[in-house]
Length: 164
Image (tube, rainbow, N blue to C red; front, side, top):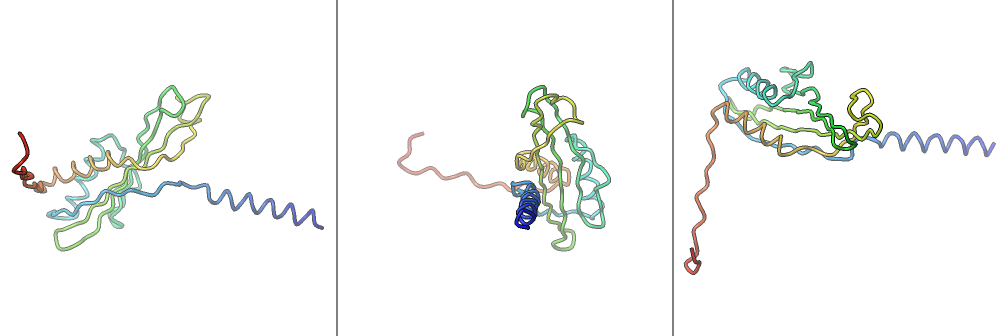
């Protein structure tokens, strides 16, 4: 009887551990508020910029939920840990009439398969966190296409005792 409880306890501990095996990295969103003539223009420009950066726009692009998720952009390499794949997510939320908040995230995973890292069917993908640089580039490309004005800051004043 005690052996049954020990086996059941062992199985439950394994299952609980398996439930925690998700990504251990928090999502890092890049955000900007944009003025756009319509939601359709924002949606079309975002999809075009995703495609221009090499992200396949798939069936996870849903205009009703204001969420666009690309397919995986895969870059395989012949050595373990050098191949990677990335997926872009864009969330839109209306802030005011003709103003939207745009949140961009690029999730990144590396291929840790040792035997055949060039075969996507055998790849062992592990999350490495988000690619914030690519997310920032995608967000700036969307802003530029929409004609959003740049925010320029005044140069810092030099102190009186500083040498040129």
